Structures are given as C-alpha cells and as structure tokens.
Amino acid sequence: MIPFVDLKTQFKQIEPQIRASIDRVLEHGQFIMGPEVLELEQHLADFCNVKHAISCSSGADALLMTLMAKGLGHGDAVFTSPFTFFATVEAICLTGATPIFIDIEPSTYNINADKLADSIKKINDQGKLKPKAIMPVDIFGLPVDYDEINTIGKLYDLCVISDAAQSFGASYKNKPIGCLTDITTTSFFPAKPLGAYGDGGAIFTNDNELADILKSIRIHGQSGDNKYVNERLGLTGRLDTLQAAILIEKLKLLPGEIKRRNQIADQYSEALKDKVGLPYVKPERISAWAQYSILVPDPESLAQTLKENNIPTARYYPVPMHLQTAIKQFGYKSGDFPVCEDTADKIISLPIHPYLTDEQIDQIINVIRNTYN
Ligand SMILES: *Cc1c(COP(=O)(O)O)cnc(C)c1O
Image (cartoon, rainbow, N blue to C red; front, side, top):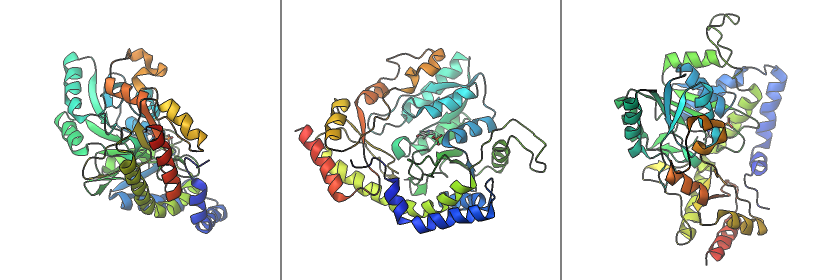
C-alpha cells in the first residue's frame, strides 16, 4: 500500500538531527517550557514574518485560547465555514458563542467571501447576537480571500482569526500564512504540513497585548510576574519541549516539502482535468496542499477501486459542520448550505505527501483515468 502520509521516509531524511535534538532535551531535562520552546517560537515568527508566535498544545487549543483571549462568550456570533474539521466549530461553541456558517465556493472549497457581508448584516438586523469575529479556514492548505475578508472585518469591526491548521507554509500574494490577518492559528498534528511527533499548535499575531494574554492563558492564566497568581482562567496549553525540539528540525524541511507537494498537485491537475472536478487555486496563492481533494460522482466506489490497487484515500469531510449532532441546538438543517453539502457528497482526497515517487503518482493517475474512461 502507498502510504497516505509518509512520516517514516521523512524521518529517515533527518534521523541523526532528530535523535540529537531529542537527546539534548533528555540531557537538560526541562521538559516543560524548556529553551527549545522559545527557540522554535523565534524560528516560527521569522518564518511567518510576524512579531509573535505563541506555541501551544494543539491546533484546537490554539483556537480556543484565542477566543478566550478575545473574551468571546454567550450572545456572540462567530462567522465561519461549514466545510472544515470539527475543532473549528467546537472552539466557538466551547466559549458559549454561536457559529454562523457561510457557504463555500464550489471550486476552492473555502468560505465564499461575497456572502460574508450579507450574513453579518442579517445577524446585526436580527439583533439577537452580537457579531464578534470572522474565523475563515484555509481548507486543505489553500489560503482564503484574505484581502476581502480583512476588509469586511474592518468594516464591521470584527476580529479575523484564521484557522490555518492545514495551511502552514502556504502563501498569499507572496506573504506567508501567519502574517495575513489579525490572528492566525495552526496545528502541528503529525499529518499536517508541519507535523510534530505528537500534538502541538501555534498562534501568530502582531498584537503585543494579545500575545501576553495568550502566554498567560496557556499556563492557567498565570500572571507574568508570579507563577501562583492567576489573573484569568486558562488551560494546560503549552507545547512540550520535546515536540519543539523535533519541530525545529522539521521546519527546515518544510519549504522543500511544500515545493514538492505543489509539483505533485500540478501533475494530478494536468492529468485529471478532463476526468474529475479539480481543486482550484486562485492567482497569487500557493497552497500547502495538506490534501489534494477532487470531486467525483461516486467517491465511495472510487475509494474502493483505488484501495484494490493499493492506493489509500480519505474522505474530508463527509458530514458538514451544520449537520453535526453535537451542535444540533442551533437548529441548522439539511439544505442550509447547498454548495457545502454537495461538496461533502462528492469529495475524496488522494495521497499528496512530499515523498511520493513519480511512479506512484503515475499509478494513481492511471487508475483514476481508467475509472472515468
Ligand atoms: C487539524 C485541524 C484542527 C485541529 O488541530 P489539532 O492540532 O488536531 O487540535 C483545527 N482546524 C482544522 C481546519 C484542522 O484541520
């Protein structure tokens, strides 16, 4: 079987460096907030061209900590995509705020920025909820329409929090993810474009005050001066030193890996354009290609055919967020977001990790071309 994500081959490229950095941590023994954590944060901030990179325990906690820092709660509305991983919506709901979904574009699978202003106006007119934040998601690694979304955020005085869990390493108009809006969060879950060997995440911002609040929240709301004075409620939200040490080494591979992912995406798109619905990348964007996802009429049977040929696939995401049982209290129903629902019925993701060989890519392409002959 071709691996869907190939962490082993990646490890073999940098095995001595990874082992040495783990050893250094074992020797100094500062497993919590050790020197590697601060070192990684400096590298991440430089990489993203942003003032503050605050590492944390996961991509989900990065979102939750950000919403906590912004004081979100009951009666607040957060505008987001119905086509995402559940953690985006979960973070909103855990604060007590209400997720308001905006349908996606059929070709990029990202939130449709043209529909955002109308939705904000509608919530304002209804007068029940107070619009507070926009939380776009760079789904599958593709940057959203940052300029348009930032403009709407300014117009309505809403904070823009980008869920870039899948797009670390991507860019928009030659600027890296992380510096493109008020606050950006990402995930270092092992299968993401920059993955640790366990859970991890980070938050990026140029806002000094927000950075201080986030650093407090990640350690139980502790005050800057005194460990046992707690100024606010927080979490056990830290990144382990071991994961930081591993990420310092893996970050060095990322630019080359993103390049390779883009080559593979181009090969897929060129070979499959007359056969299946392709993921569309608008001009001036470079995707991190966390996933390469196509639209077909029968994704389950394509998955079966590929599996018989030792090619793994995944279905991201078969159930839209507005139809999740966990948030049924908001009363969303089938038909509310037709583009998202249609996409969920047709989408299937192909292997796109940077260690795929050209032979493997040709094999995958051939099976799909033969299926839709
Ligand atoms: C993976 C992911 C998250 C959550 O990240 P974790 O590190 O697994 O908590 C949040 N949002 C999106 C879009 C994701 O893909």
